Length: 76
Image 1: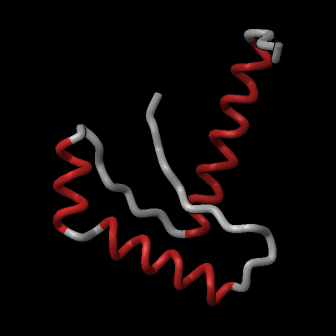
Image 2: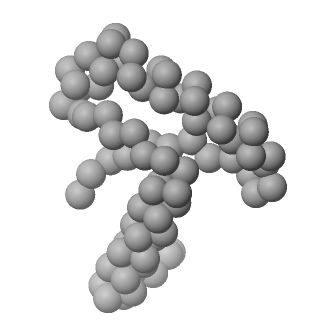
């Protein structure tokens, strides 16, 4: 199991806005001080394209959904 963080937008956000946000986020995540801080906490930076992250997010959703169903976890 791992912890990951992402930046989300609402559906219908114009592509140029999404691309600008991705560019800004990637700029921050690849800055040497950011990389050092994340590594110092035992993490690693992994830059994904919008398509790669979308696929990863869907796979995680399905994986944890299956785990919850198989364990018969219910909200109280």
